[in-house]
Image (tube, rainbow, N blue to C red):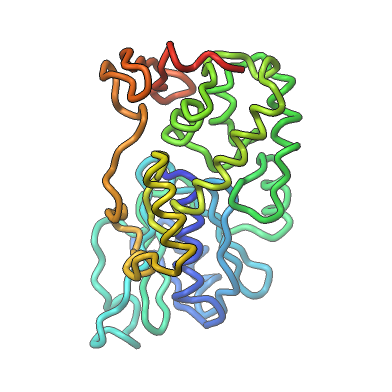
Amino acid sequence: MPEGHTIHALAGRLNRAFAGGSVRVTSPQGRFAGGAQILDRRVLVEAGAWGKNLFVEFDGDAWLHVHLGLIGLFPVVPLPEDLRGADPEDIPTTGAVRLRIVGDGHVADLRGPMTCALVTGDEIAAFTRRLGPDPLRPDADPDLGWAKLSRSTRPIAELLMDQAVLAGVGNVYRCEVLFRHRVDPMRPGKEIRQSTWRAIWDDLAAMLPLGVVYHQILTMDDQIEAAQAEIAAGQAPRHTADLTGERLGDHFERRFFLYKRTGEPCLVCGSKVRSKPLAGRTLYWCGRCQRRR
């Protein structure tokens, strides 16, 4: 399932391609035909994200709510010159396209989402009130997450995946950030120190924006430092802004401290990386390194 940085990057792509202009909206698959008809030829005002949820505002208080789930894709692709201005139905499709947005120079095809719904602004407000703070949002308040986590008897590794506690974090980030701070993943939330929670939050708030830029999850210290230095110097590769969402970025080697390294030696202490199912995903941790609370 895409983690929060993926959805924020998607919102950015939609805004660069369509925001401020009238768009054509169709449902080639037919499963969103009614909603598409209502949105068709409206101005796409702005796309935004909260955790793993995408919200796209159209004029007239019409909103699109999308959750990609496990298999959803929503690439934003430049249209070839010969298809610009063409009827949306004349643009070739690949697979079952639930929703199609077509602008002057781009097409965005939504496939396989868990949620694709036409909603109102009031419904969006009610929905987001149930979500935890999102480290990628400027209005995020980490104390709201702490208030829920600090009262819970559930393991910290489970709470980090609970979108009502912390929005946008998925399995890779939860495993890696707990290791980065040497936190015992089985420790109940109510036993976690507030300083530990704040360190985790600050670390996520630093790592997630790198994922937005590079479309990669970066958790290794050397890669984080290199990415931050590139961004600060205005040297982030130009192609990262042109990623369509069809594939992961490849600017950095894909490597992690723990993720999918069951039985391999811990990169810090050398003991074997452990794994077990927790909160619907496989948790990876080091029993020797991760003992803090």
